[in-house]
Length: 76
Image (cartoon, rainbow, N blue to C red; front, side, top):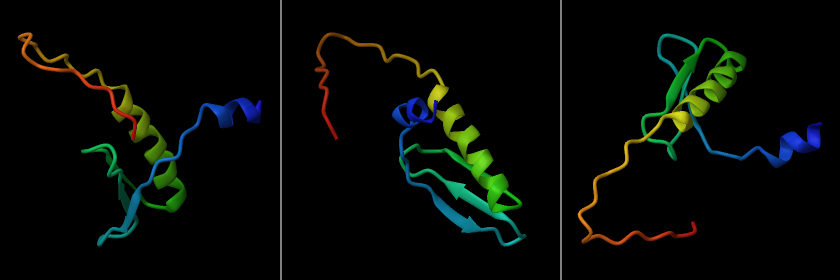
């Protein structure tokens, strides 16, 4: 089962900060607005997984098109 889990996982960079009032907070630069906090590093990691899943599951409204635009698909 571990092999299947590895295939479906992705790596993403997060920036972890020590909070002034204690504990930690983290942000995910690749997902604007995605951040969380935790009293311990263990709690922070759990919260990060939940925050990233939540941010990626948000349905984004489709923009209205007038026929004058181009849609490109690029690889990064």
